[in-house]
Image 1: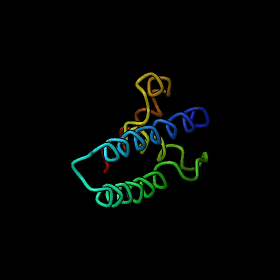
Image 2: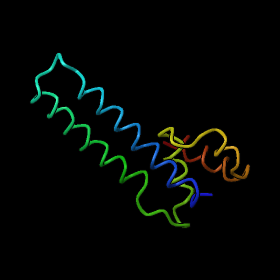
Image 3: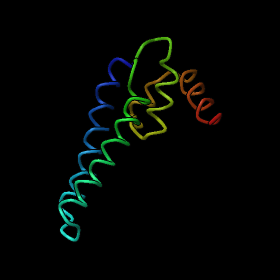
Image 4: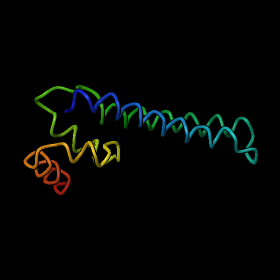
Length: 98
């Protein structure tokens, strides 16, 4: 499941980030320099997030990654429902432990 979901969730995350950047880019109330600085901050923050959520997709950390994907809103309900009930319980347990 993670092998199929990982690239889709990564694409969703990047699309969300690019949409956020587009809002800043189109904000004519700010100077070009202010927009640049805000975009730079977004990129820095999202780069840290993308690393913590998506790096190292292997079996040994699949549950942790699924929990992070779920917490970030990167798993659709359909994708989440396709996980086994045991896996969903484990993910919810990890999310509750935060």
